[in-house]
Amino acid sequence: MLLTNKNTTETGIQKRTIERTITIGPLTLKFITLLIFAALTLFYLAQSTQSATKKYELRELKLTQEKLETDKQMLESEALRLKSLKTIEPQIKDLNLVPVDKTNQ
Image (cartoon, rainbow, N blue to C red; front, side):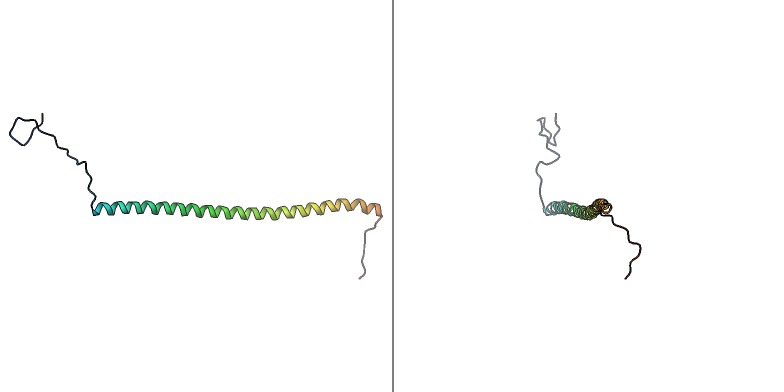
């Protein structure tokens, strides 16, 4: 049984304490706009930070690649030099060459 403000014995109708309709006024619109703007700003900052991090990592990898390529070229030239020395040594013995003690210039 529901009590009403009227002095009758008729059953009353319960009113809702919270309204079902939402009114959007200028203050609510400003608040929603501010929230959307803040979310977009955070998204932009996250993307730009991630992009900067990826660029930094890419630059580091390129520097490492360049260093490895120069090391590879040095090692290849050293291998060729050592290979050529190994092929020259037997030929020196076959040609009966003598080492030079002194040079006159």
